[in-house]
Image (tube, rainbow, N blue to C red):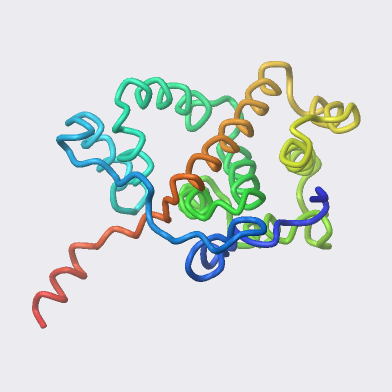
Length: 225
């Protein structure tokens, strides 16, 4: 896949961008939707993970994230992963808007509907507008790509090359270092690698985007009918 083009599927702003019925495996039959490991119950994941998942859903405007309730079945690993992930986002040194742009571009390139939908919501709070999403999906070949700032273009070019090659050539690395110091460059590499890893796990687990939370007002309205 060329870094100048987007993937054939995935990450579209108004939907998951995947064919109806779930993603298709390359050269094989369409994969049936549905999680391969079901989200755990409170008893299965423990009270701490259960409460954290509910809180995360409130922040994201969704039901408790299925990702938390699946990974939470392995409680010790979940705690270690959560600390690491939190150091990258939201506790990283890169500005939140830039972090979300990198995550969303990675999710789109990986055709990971769960990751894209979740960070579309978080990105909105960090200043990622609808026009930004459209540009992320359109890719470098689109005229709109030129409207990114030089720093944003450097970050996104490096994101694309890491996806395509799992490496950076000297020109892309030097372009990145014009904007990032050593610590920020290390963080950026781990950020992209982390969300590539998550996209792999989410895809293999067949997790679908978390549905939005029901608002109390809508429940009251439906109950009065």
